[in-house]
Image 1 (spheres, rainbow, N blue to C red):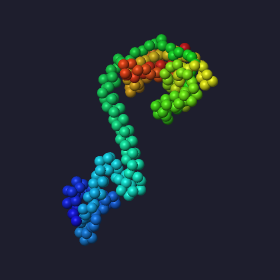
Image 2 (cartoon, one colour):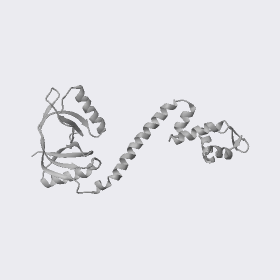
Image 3 (tube, rainbow, N blue to C red):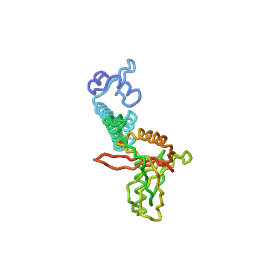
Image 4 (cartoon, rainbow, N blue to C red):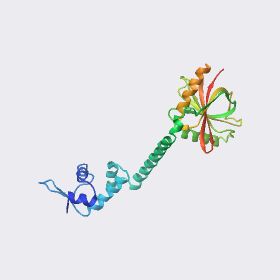
Length: 246
């Protein structure tokens, strides 16, 4: 038998933590002296303790560890979920890292270009309605191209995302692409616009503010925005069109 101090040295689990594990019924001592309250552990329990330490190093919660130890859920199920959580965190951290590295772009207020006499061309389009407040944009784009494939539509452009800003439209917007005429397409009449080239996708809010300011200078009322994407030297460039009626 080992005292809690001895067992702590063997397993590298602090005595305070061992007492806590006992209290929450995660890992109880082999026996406890009913008079002194001292906890004693046996040699076989070291393997059990090592497994708990391993799971903790995986970043699993104590609740998950209790479930795993109980055998109620297969180990692979919880570990696969944990891997997905880690992948999500890695993706989020990489995005944060990229924003830090591109801090100079965000702070460069002269990194945009206006094209005051721009025009968003009219033509036959295939459009797909979206709720801009409730769906992930990547999911929307995927659904859009699935629809194109299922309806065998021939498109002539990359997708463009259009955001309506009319307060009566309930955030319903659309994603569309110019296409060959078919039973599933419609005619888009085109629109006068103020176009702005956004050199960094992550900081579009700065450019939208600039567009609103420019529209105010021109004394025009914006009725929608359209975003078009292109790759220049391996970097994603966003063209934002502030659409208005003359």
